[in-house]
Structure formats: structure tokens, C-alpha cells
Image (cartoon, rainbow, N blue to C red; front, side, top):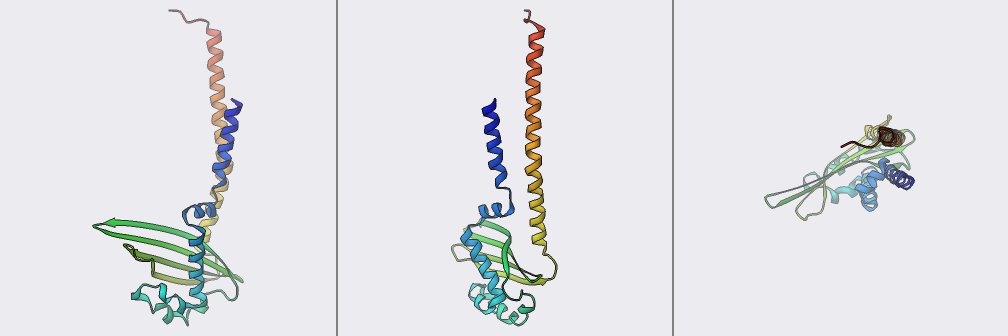
Length: 192
């Protein structure tokens, strides 16, 4: 019984260790891809013209055209950047294979927040290209980071509630088994 309890406790600790948002994101997206996405988002603020080669041909000049407007949306000086949201989809119909990634990267410096939203798209074996992009500056914390805060609070609550719930269930099972055995002893042998 003690060995089973120790095994259950060990499994629970391992299970709850990966409940943070960043741990979940790390399982979905390789660290190399995360760094690449963050670097692309930073380039929209630091050097928008350098992103032209990454953009779909239909919107290739949009970054150059928007370049004069981007400094007011972007943080001044060095910023802290993080991948705040990642969503990917694949679809294969009638011989056409489509891949899509939607990402949100958030940068912050000196109380100014910048949200860079990117949608990558590719068909068949073509490389992913940016099909849509948006850069938005704000003095308030972006919704993507508010979601991360809520996720972390929920995970923290689960780290507390889940072990207590499992302990209560284990206690109930232990009590029921002891009660059943006690009743069996007092009832005597079964009569045919």
C-alpha cells in the first residue's frame, strides 16, 4: 500500500511539474522555432524592410510602406520579448497540403508593450511565408499576457487542488475497504 502511494505521489509530482504555460509552449514549439519567431517579430520593429523576403508576394511591400509608422508602436531601446501565443493547423484535401501557424509575440520596454501578430502560411512543400502581420503598441498589458497570467493562476490552483482531491479519494477508498473488511469479520461465515 505504501509503495503504491509513493508511486502515485511520484507520478503526480511529475504530472504537475509540466503545467506552466512556458512548459506547454516548449512541448508544442521547438526552442529553435520559438527563437526564430521572436527574431522575426523583433525585426518588424527594428528593421521592417528586412522582413520583405519573409512576406507573401501579395503583401511584400506592406512592411516597407508601414515602416515610418512602426516606431511609435514599438518599444524604445532594448526590450524583453516572449512568444505569448502559438496555434498551428494543417489541412490536406484533393492533393493540396496546407500549413498555417498563427503566433503572437509580445515585447516590453519602459512600460510600453508591443504586440506583433503573425500568420504564416504555406501550400504543399513550399516554405512558410507571412500572409498577415500586425504590430500594435500599448501602455497596458496585452490580452495575450493576461491569458498567460490566468493560465498560470489556474495551473497553480490545480497544483494545490488536484493532490488534495486525490488524497481525499484515496482516503475514501481506504475507509471503504476497511469498513467492508470490518463488516465481513463481524458478520461471520456466509451460510449456504
